[in-house]
Length: 390
Image (cartoon, rainbow, N blue to C red; front, side, top):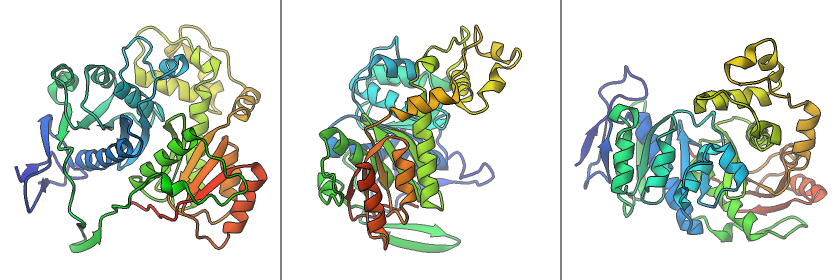
């Protein structure tokens, strides 16, 4: 098949819409549903991300994509009891791929609402069982077991978008897009990201553990497919905060850091023990946790507001408790798709427990940024690769 009619373009009024190839066949097949323009952009970008993560670390990988940027991405590492509770996966069997999906979806569950899922490996029943419970637009994978496909085809009344991608497909070296009636052409970003990107450590602290290297590579690969400017925070084999599409570098760092802090606070015993009402849906629970952890949490607990989501009034999480909890966080890794122009990015990063950083380098103020890292004992590598993605 050389052409596929799409549901519509970026907006419902933009019809007709299609995806087509001028040579060969389309490298994917729609097994169920009718994807739209943005669905397919998310599918193809997210597939490239998980394929590259699998190549870099030889682990199953998954991504939760929303509007051309990952809300989360992760490797298929086992979940401890805390993560299983955070990700609503306590009572489900978890394969390595299912763990990758639960982690990717769990990075920023509010942003992942209505996401697109990408899987590096053949989708198994365990992963499909997790996907079926989430509000999601579709999934792309190199294949599906018969059980997994049957389960996913039941989702959204049989209209869930399921795409099977040819894992051997590689696009041409040149890519072309049309904007305002004009054609732009460039070499696609085929730079290879591997451990060599972490070899130029410019700080006094030059020690990177294997876990830090894994998380820094996760950041770099994710940044390659994140709308710029962008910064990623990662911990324990998964992204925990993504700041995408900001005009200011420090705003990327702040946005991603705020998301990372929120992820850390979800691990607090009080957040894990919230007494949700029986039968409350996952999106409602996610919203309730977010409000509980926000500065407006008192509003949720005023009067009888809490009765809508909780079976009993939860004990508030005070600002002092939040500061104490976040103050104990360490071992977080950070990646930036372009150089840090000022040391304020380091100041913000260290407040979220960042101990390792990778960025291209090349700023006239590199010395100030390095000095800030040295002050806090942070290890920083210059990868020499700018990873803008638009």
